Image (tube, rainbow, N blue to C red; front, top):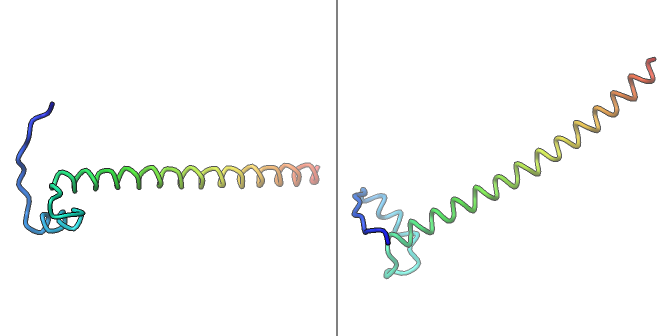
Length: 76
């Protein structure tokens, strides 16, 4: 089991962390873990959106390439 570590934060950071606590009894560790989880979830969502965007771009590129191939044949 990992040990407990004390950290120092500015008052404004503490107040921001307070807003992530669901109850007054929640620890700052709970708030930090919640933030980390939220960031990881957002990263996965962003990755999914990027992948979908890249797939759409690839489809469009293939479509354009086929159109140019046909145009090339028509010119010959």
